[in-house]
Length: 149
Image (tube, rainbow, N blue to C red; front, side, top):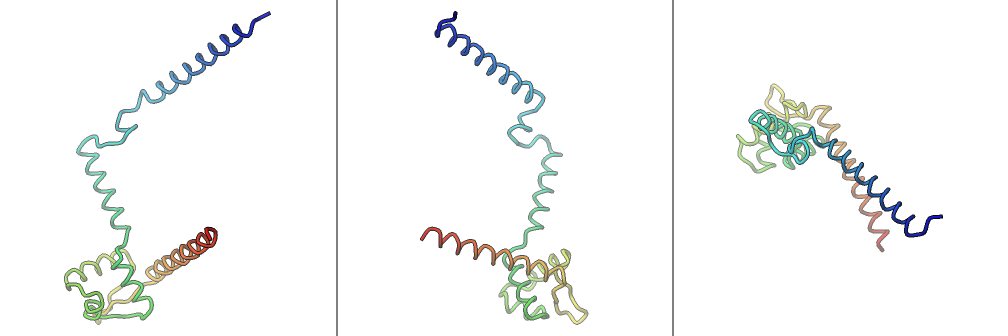
């Protein structure tokens, strides 16, 4: 019959063998990966250009507060001339034209032949989704405040 000491020694040995197998499996798993795959980083100029392209795409997807403010205003009242937008946003005309062109390229607004700006259906849906998100955040905040009281 085995003593308690022998049994403990066998269990420790088995445990160490299992840990060794797990460690070796882990090392084999990451052996084929480079430090860039594991920890990130930039590899070459090709990677840098791809990274910049992805960053620019993300920046283009995100609308600025200014854009959202304008879309919200357009969704409520419908149509504005560029001069009215300049007065409302209190920015320079070239800056506003650039932003309007970007919003038009995304399909959120359209310019009429008379020179005024109107919101498209895509723009209305976008503003509505933002309002809905804000409503849910407000309700969530109210619920969290009730739980803490």
